[in-house]
Amino acid sequence: MKKPLASAPHLAPSLRAVPFLKGAADRDAVVLTNRQREQLARISLRLRLPARMVIYREEAAADWVFAVAEGVVKCYRDLPSGKRVVGAFLFAQDLFGLAENGRYLNCAQAITGVTLYRFPLSDLIVLMKHDADLQFQFLAKVTHELRESQRRTILINRRDAAGRLAMFVVALMHRHPARSAGSGLVPLPMTRSDIADFLGLSLESVSRAAAELERRGLVRFENRHLARIVDAARLSKLVAAV
Amino acid sequence: MKKPLASAPHLAPSLRAVPFLKGAADRDAVVLTNRQREQLARISLRLRLPARMVIYREEAAADWVFAVAEGVVKCYRDLPSGKRVVGAFLFAQDLFGLAENGRYLNCAQAITGVTLYRFPLSDLIVLMKHDADLQFQFLAKVTHELRESQRRTILINRRDAAGRLAMFVVALMHRHPARSAGSGLVPLPMTRSDIADFLGLSLESVSRAAAELERRGLVRFENRHLARIVDAARLSKLVAAV
DNA sequence: CGATGCATTGATATCGGTCAAAGATGGTGG
DNA sequence: CCACCATCTTTGACCGATATCAATGCATCG
Image (tube, rainbow over all chains, first blue to last red; front, side, top):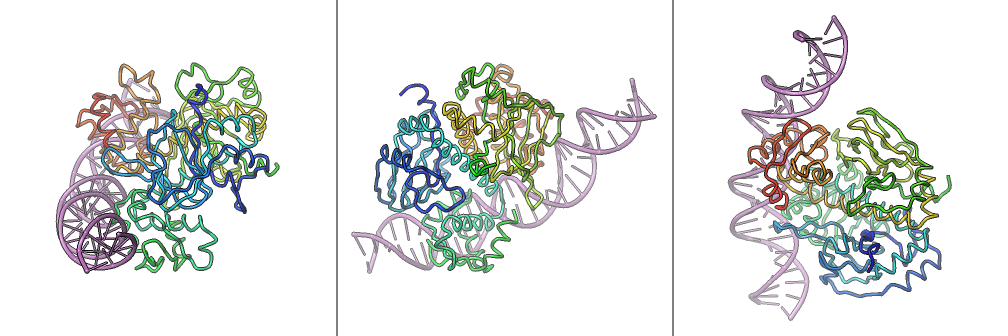
């Protein structure tokens, strides 16, 4: 691999909806020509992985970029102290595989059973260098990721555990507008521990925060992996009270 | 402005060294041809602004992307609660101007007197769509920004104020390897309050954290705007003890 | 029906936020 | 050149929220 590839852009997680886009009505939807879809399909490989499977490890050679077709993936890093930081949860049509100097920066693991598309980074780069419009979609998506990352920084800055958890639930809701539309049901495929590592809280605090949201009548946690938004208005108010 | 521009990528802050690159020996340096430099120069405007000048405000129409030629800029958001979050400090050869839906996502303000280059976003997009290699440099830079943003998330996750401040000082040191090489001197152009808003601490905590780093003999704060790294080894250890 | 991992709940200690006041610092104008 | 003022910074006392430690409760899967 030549220098330009070695210092390649290492595509970002959550480039939503780039390949294999279906309905794609959302504002950030990528618009690809059929030819572009074809080219992306040609270099990709479809994979099915069971829950808990590690997709790649930190420091491993970053030869691929992945797209989620189905299921949920988490990206995380284990810190020297033993703490774990979950950097992102990836859902259908998100991309992941962020790297630096040819090595992945974090681990990726399937939370549920998943179906993925895998792109060789080198092929993808060639494609982008030949097709500025396609590349532009990627640029837009990475930029989108950057915005999300900055939002998350603000989220983490909140001191109150209940507020953080509320933001998390609402964020997940926006991710599945279809499912949660009428019922207010929001699936939480990950564990409390994952949520804690994502929000920068202890898992006990997440648990207590959940209890508080229930006590306040904002959210009902039907079971471990399903929340129901009871009072969207007041929940929004809490979320906005950054 | 047509649709493609309206949903344009809104270039990220800190696209280091894209235009007007001088020495550029660092690993992430962008490699531009003379022709590319020329083209970038043609669409840019050079600006000089005094300290404290607001460069743009949140929600303003995001028509430009900026590059720092000299001086220091901060990007920040004011939250409803009255708290302020500093998203980034920008130094020479950083780019900034992150936007969404044609509006800037935060405010940018000069900390010191600054010299900037200003690029009309629309021209820049045209340029990138015509030159995939140039665009690729931008993609790489935005990706770099994303990595930095994720690092920052980890930084913020630290509970101990001293550790956060230590990370901040070390990060600034890496930013000015030349200056801080032998002497261990690290300039801190921003105020304690800015640092606090960046680290997610109160300014009192920053002050106390600084006192602790001095007490422990790791860093000496010569004056408000200058730190001296006294014991780089032990400081690194503290930084790594995430 | 254990058994294992996950989640909740409780008690306690620690650390940073907040409020308050005093101490530097730097710039301005007399 | 100095005095003064505004701004920034430091320090202290106190309080509250979360981490931590510990134990119990609850599923899910052999």
